[in-house]
Image 1: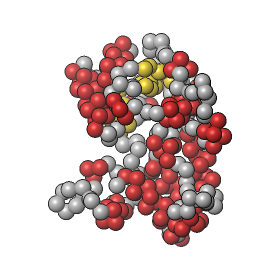
Image 2: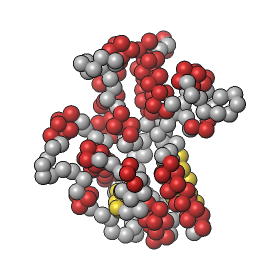
Image 3: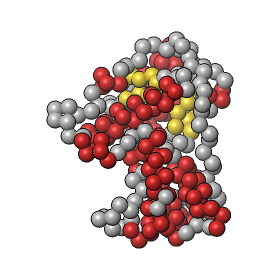
Length: 262
């Protein structure tokens, strides 16, 4: 949406460890965040853009950055934790007072929480009716195409340096197992989807409940960190299944995407 506006863009990430309180990320999440941001920065570099970083309170930094660059609009993907909703509401209020358009989008769910409810307007408390209601809405919107060029705003203030955030463990460096097992970033997420659909999904309905088997998609951290969206995963599964309808294993996997939202 920012790209489609036709205006120069500042791509920013705020590392806010104050607002979440006791929900601030632990060591493994910080390790993942470092490598995910590095991958995003590399992807932006490849299209002539760059990632602006700052650590602190998002409800202070974002309006301040908008004022400094004289932004006409700020765009972000919605967050749903109570503390995040409060924070984003404060950001929207401040931006509105400053005359800046604030637009948030669904980037991490198949459907918004308020879009599925029982006949009396309440949230579902049982999964099966929730899943049936979600499917009755039809296919989720197809993912937007990747942005291949970006008109970059050149006057942004100095960015933090990612390595200065010290997100990775050093003494001791206990992350060897993570490095051997995971590849954070969008490319890593797409590889996980491809690997899963090339064979592991074929026995998913039964094998996913057997911990000794390599039978799950292993997409959870990629979804959590926003490196891939459930809509991308949904449509990849549908495309992989072809025109013959969903197999039992594919239906079971998509229902787990639904369970994540339930």
